[in-house]
Amino acid sequence: MHEKTTCLTSAPVDAQHRWFIIRGRIHFERGALTAAKAEFEQAGRLIDTEEYEFAEPNKRRAVVRHSLGVVARKRDNLEIAVECYEESLALAREIGSQRGEAASLQGLGNVARKRESLKAAAEYYEEALALTQEAGDRQGQAECLNSLGNVLFQRGNLPRAELYYKASLRLCREVGDRQGEARSLNNRGNVARKRDGLETAEEYYDESLALSREIGDRKGEAASLTSLANIAVMRGNLPNARSYYEKSLIIRREMNNRQGKADSLHGLGNIARMSGDLGTAETYHMQSLGLYGKVGDRQGEAKCLNSFGNVLFQRGNLPSAELYYKESLRLCREVGDCQGEAECLINLGNVLFMYGNLIPAERYYVQSLALYRKVGDRRGEAQSLSNLAEIVRECGSPKIAESYVEEAFVILHSNAIIGDMFNIFHKLIDICNQRGAEARAIEWCEQAIEFADRTENEMECEEFKKRQAELVATEG
Image (cartoon, rainbow, N blue to C red; front, side):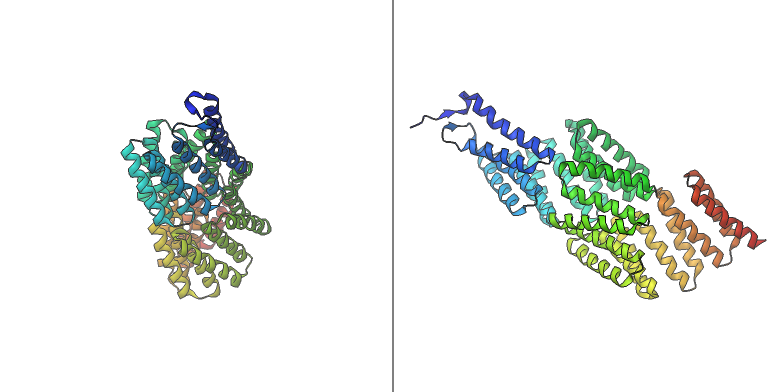
């Protein structure tokens, strides 16, 4: 019969166990999930080897089960992830580890959020937050606050999400958690992009990117690059946006991050569509849709279906575009994605407008406007107002139409959303010209020329100069 050797007097075995865990985490960060799983399983087998007797074996088992849960969730094996997290939770409670219990609850919350069960996710995160507060674990508190902010952001509650992200950022800085700090900065940028304007958002994203690169956090770096791509799109700088998306895609491919790859490919598809390359856009969206389906991201699927609708709309295939928009709308409502719902509604309104069904189109625009205001999406709000202006303009009320577009202009200008500004200038000039206010139309041309010159957009500058000359000639 073998005499058991305690871990305390057998340092090599203890070190071997720790090394398996460390190697597993290194593999995980590299995206080598199969290798990470093998290392964690080896650590688990070592604990259960009868030849050795480890101090606090259940504490070590809890770490192993939690680590395997993280890998399973990353591989989208959600049932296995839940099983592992529940086992680690039971072990943590058995040994009285509040930090281990909180980490397991966080894991269960992440699975619930992955399944788009936001209420359940919030409950797990809140329970974990209470435990970290009781244990005085400020880094754990920061993680829980950030997770709760993500739930609120996904629900469209931007003011409360901002409060949680701000509190998380403060705690991360207090404890020196640079990775958590970068994550919170990026999330604050996401809120700012919808509420406070692009300059504020860009500052957060740039700071997050610099931090992620400084600490070698490739996943965080890719997230910040994607965020900066979104800013570039809103400013109308498609080459910069494409460059950011391509850089993020390279990183995510290296890490085998399927969710991230889907996001980058979707962004590249949108850039291709906006550049008029519809074939390439379809290819990117098809790849993205396949990845979202594999990881079970229905919100991502809804986003792709909406984008496919945009490609079909641009091709003039309105019946097919309408079908895609409706399917996307159904999914958005199922998962509680208010912003996605607003985008589908505005697109369905566009289809009906093209059919000449103005009253139903107006209903869709009004609904989208209410939702954009609810979630605090100023760009979407401006788009809805601009589209409502087209309805009342078609109905013979150019003065009311002008007031809608002017309201949209104020929103876009105050938030530095350059990409949409030129369309608004064109609409204002058209409306003023339609109602016989040529002098006012010329004034808008002058503002547009100054704006195009300031933003170094030579093509638009020349276009507005041409329009101004035509109006001056007509007025004379």
